[in-house]
Amino acid sequence: MESFKIISRSEEDTARLAADLAGKLPRGTVIALYGDLGAGKTVFSRAFARAIGVRETVSSPTYTIIQEYILDDGGYFYHLDLYRIKNSRDALAFAVDEYLNDSNAYALLEWPERIEDILNPETLKINIRHLSDTEREITVGY
Ligand SMILES: Nc1ncnc2c1ncn2[C@@H]1O[C@H](COP(=O)(O)OP(=O)(O)O)[C@@H](O)[C@H]1O
Ligand SMILES: [Mg+2]
Image (cartoon, rainbow, N blue to C red):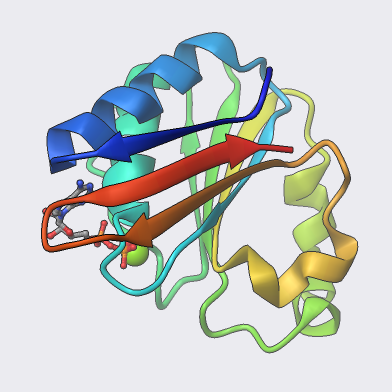
């Protein structure tokens, strides 16, 4: 996929982008989702999950760090919120690498900067930047 940048003007725009990407990305994809508090990472994650077939309600696993959802065909969606993790050493202590190397799963990371040093070069990077109350600049690339 070529890198690109869009302006999202609503929560729905961001959700639509997430669903579009979900339809194009293969199983095994790891998505690093960057953005400040309130940028729309969870909005994106929820729409992405829905589009790959997760039926449960997705909310950010801020306290549990990892939430895993099983898909109908036995695949998985791993949703990680690394906000409370200090660094990759702490993350490896709970075997974060197993979530990042599962070819039968999608893994989506909020606060990926915490483990930047162990992210694989194939990780898809999405950056959501606040422009205004309702507008976000979203860049997608590797
Ligand atoms: N263009 C937009 N894209 C995504 N969210 C938006 C947008 N405009 C406003 N919002 C609002 O911003 C908030 C984003 O919250 P959330 O997804 O929980 O952020 P994060 O997980 O990055 O902290 C929501 O209240 C959402 O309605
Ligand atoms: Mg969030």
